[in-house]
Image 1: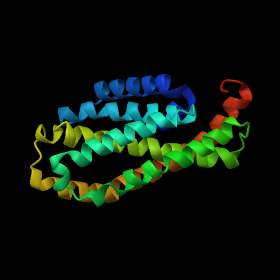
Image 2: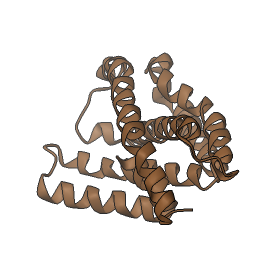
Image 3: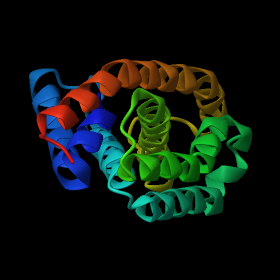
Image 4: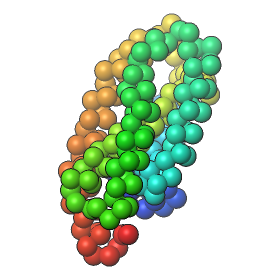
Length: 195
């Protein structure tokens, strides 16, 4: 539901709500590997991205993707990790402009489910995959794989498994956010709580 936090609260309030949820969740149930507690920052960035997209500031999301992908691709370990394993992140990068298009149509006064559905679905996909890319950045570029420790020769297998599991998680997120988000955002609009 983190993308919905960004869509409803905007980039600042959405990211704040996400980080509060992360902190409370990690305090209530800490991760087994201590370093994994830091990956919660990715959830806040995902919420922030959804907020940026829903406030028509998609260029910020584009810039974050370009920076993260560029840093990863220029890192020496990018030669070890099969680049095709991030296919879902590349697809999400390409979906930024379509997401921005549908959000713009929302701001043109069209709030029906026919416009909300693709706007929420694409925004969710872009923000959830940005969460994934932040985790990849932290793991590889910032070197957190060494803290686990994960041997370098095991990284390709981890990314190959992730190439099949993370898209499934993204599909779950898209379905959940659109099923909940379309009626929720329509209700919030009707009640005057959102613009």
